Image 1 (cartoon, protein in one colour):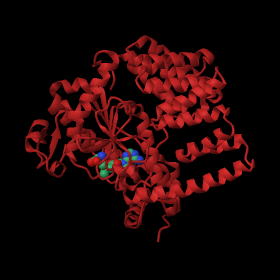
Image 2: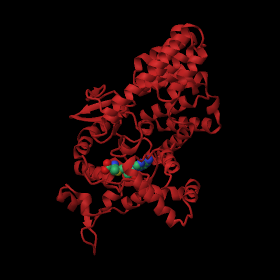
Image 3: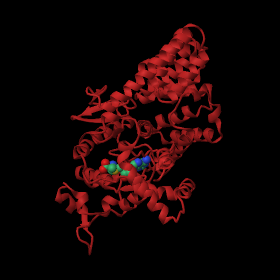
Image 4: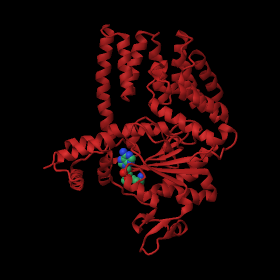
Length: 496
Ligand SMILES: C[S@@+](CC[C@H](N)C(=O)[O-])C[C@H]1O[C@@H](n2cnc3c(N)ncnc32)[C@H](O)[C@@H]1O
């Protein structure tokens, strides 16, 4: 009997896979198969090989990934994309710069694209609606952890099984039969050329630049074997890379499970999708499912218990002066880093009541409130911080970011400049300044501001930055890559 525990721990840590009873057999047979191929004399030798050789880990992952997919899965979500989301995104982009800048394509990412049926369906649906122009308007990107699946997606050859339920007229328009084969079809080049594929681990700390700044992410049927913690962290990262005004689409059966407050869930034409902005939306915001799934119920119960314990303990310690304000703040900061915003908010409120001039408490609260799109309250805490210290860079920075996120570009620019006036090394302010002027179509100033942010980051100023009390979800490595990526686009004038 194989001791699967070390293998399970490694796979959970690396790619987020879990193996419950039914899947343990697949795990042990895959390990035995790869160990034999690698001529590992014992399983412990194979484990050593796995931890030292990422190529071998990738091979094992290929055997364990569940690649089930087919063309035009949940077609109503594809229709929603072409008929409602894309027109809204085009309109929002046109409004922000006066006209729609077609040199910057609308990017759609299929995260966990398996053998390519999903991204090809997206490109076909766009071509059906927008015709040949779709090649200039859109870029579609597919990523998956399974290298063999990506190789197969790049080939673009499919059997009948992938076409189940698909209209045969679409097969005729977009595929050609593979010569000397029975029942195999190859995707035509004009669709194939519109799609970029890459192997990527969604559970990794850093994402490839290819998937940065998408307008729509399809993240369907991928998270099923992830434990809650992995689900939350991948969803947060995807939400972070998504453009403002963009949408994150999960499969209909997974929708309520992801309703954890990271992005608001909106209803459009009776379908539910996540949106990274509450502005300019014709859709209805849904607070929480009226019928929570068992899982949501279990999670909320667990969180409520932790919350109850934490707050009652904190309140009594605070009342008896056994806990210093600085300690309270550190606990709140730790909760925030662990994604336990509710707990952090309650502690920060207790702290502010006790010590109203604790500026960092106002700033951290403002940061958490901004994350949950509670912009008005966030702004009021920034203003309180400024009343106590008119040279408080992070407060100006936060106000600038909020104004930027809520489409008040002029005010955003003013606030970010104020932040930079006090602290010229504030790279976050340079970054958001670049984002704002870029949105306004001023490429020259955007390039210069992205360069400033990058230079400061490269000189290691990050560690000294006063704004580091903001638990930004991007680490500085990701910001560097993001600046580089934006500079490449601006300097080339086009985007993949
Ligand atoms: C069931 S398929 C879904 C394909 C497609 N999205 C669909 O809905 O038809 C799930 C895919 O997610 C990929 N996947 C699982 N964990 C991943 C991870 N950590 N990073 C990237 N891809 C992952 C698997 O390799 C698999 O190809």
